[in-house]
Image (cartoon, rainbow, N blue to C red; front, side):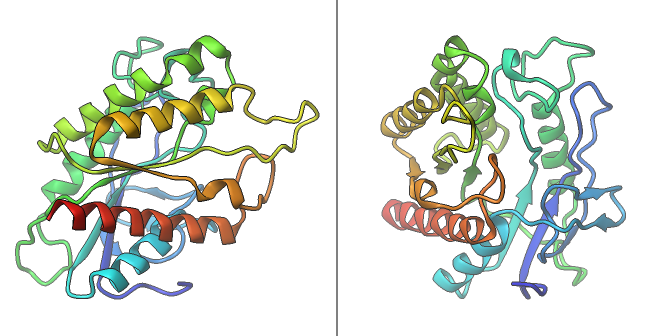
Length: 256
């Protein structure tokens, strides 16, 4: 996975802060390492970073599970973001009703990235129009909502459901599968917990999946090592991508 993964394409929308001009720029290119923190795009070229996300092992495992399928990933992410406006901090917020500053937030940048990605019809550069068949949503988030007070954490299930419903609506597919990664805690804080309300958010994630009908909760995160108090180590991220792929594949197989 340290080299390009032939036959797998990714559109990574330029990560942008709240209250900045709506962006979403990116290009379709063959998936390779570098789509982690520090990545950016100007819509003409991608500048890769020294980090990666779960997309690498996710795509490789999906290719193993569905060897005859073409795989394309649309990614938009920004580290440290919350869903709840009150937990936005300096990293950003996904609440569409965000009213701070000029009101532009992560959901706005996400919609712009989706619009940009879908407007580029030739994904693999063969001069022929490609058609995207939507397969699912991958969501690994919730830590920020677990560290700004119990009231915010208690709202997480409602906030998560609303956001997933809106993302599904953006793709015009109200039962699009959702794979959720359960947040976990390194314990590397003097208090013993990095995310003080983590258990509330974990329960909210489980409740969302239980009530949704087209969602799966990935729980292997509890077993991962950490590179710092907040992030899994490389082995953990690689396993997380594989678990997301297997969960999505199993959910898609059950629906057939």
